[in-house]
Length: 82
Image (cartoon, rainbow, N blue to C red):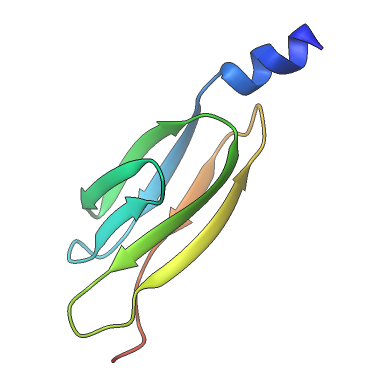
């Protein structure tokens, strides 16, 4: 049990790719900002990434991060015009 608690306490790297125009946030965590390529650290769990861009419908991407996950990439490109 202690090992499982330890694994969930270790942050995992998540690479976020976007178009450099979209404002990206992680619901319940905070703002990532506008970027084309950024790596953030999050603890294992369930998250919703949101990409918002003027003139387009916001894109929500649910992501489940498991302990020990490596090489996770989230691509956020809002592409549905309002």
